[in-house]
Length: 317
Image 1: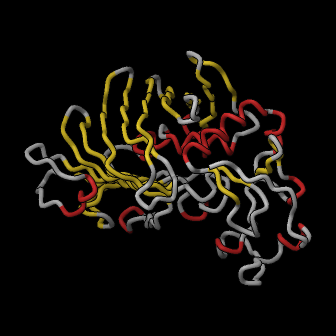
Image 2: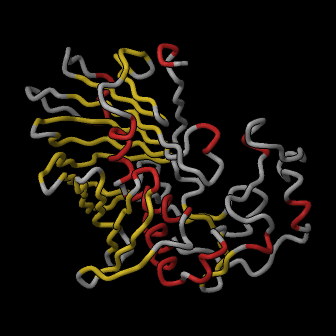
Image 3: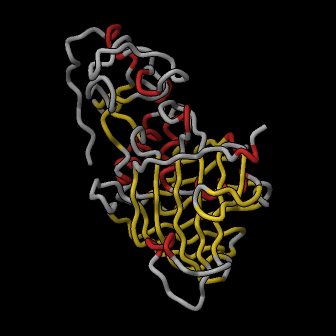
């Protein structure tokens, strides 16, 4: 969807916007008190601080205005994914990249580590208090069905009768754990949260959300005639490289972490199950040092799902 040029602002002054939610008349308060009534902007302090790129207004770090070519590519990627939207708070005054599309669910079948598998993956890139802000604090819940004897629609992974062949792995923030079924604690994770979350940092939505936060420092280059964005990923002390095709779709990502090259190839972008025009690749191939670790065909995806990530009592300090 194309961004909407915003030629005028609502008559109310910028200062009053920051004080009152027009939907309820209640004042905004800090995010720790109530997410709904927080400051509605990620990077700016006042509507006059909006960044203008090609006549369109965006809530981006101020330096983005001096990094136009790279930001144009980031906007194209966001648009191709359906993550380019007008702001959800205090009127349609500007555009945001990924502000309403930080939660994803997808269902897939294929192979993982050489074994047939059906999976359901729930992702929230901004769990809890970070959800309405600019920081990323992701969580993942992956249900992996390893039943080689029976082909199963990945969308029904929750209802399988398979015994002892299902993993439910979870990570949120710096904690990881396994569940016997979604929401039921089984044991502390045998792999770290960073390791479990790495795969979602390789996915196309992460490139937009990471790039949005660093729009003043991302870089643009050429890779075989295609645009390639280089985006800082401080969580892994690395950089994510994201290759865009002519449509702006992210077709390849790669990042080196702890001496290993993680990469992913994406194709066959399709609309979401709710027909919100939020796109996601329906073919995903993931590799580590060139060796395929997952080859998946996505059967459906959604965004904007309500998700909860309660820390199990067994892990609370």
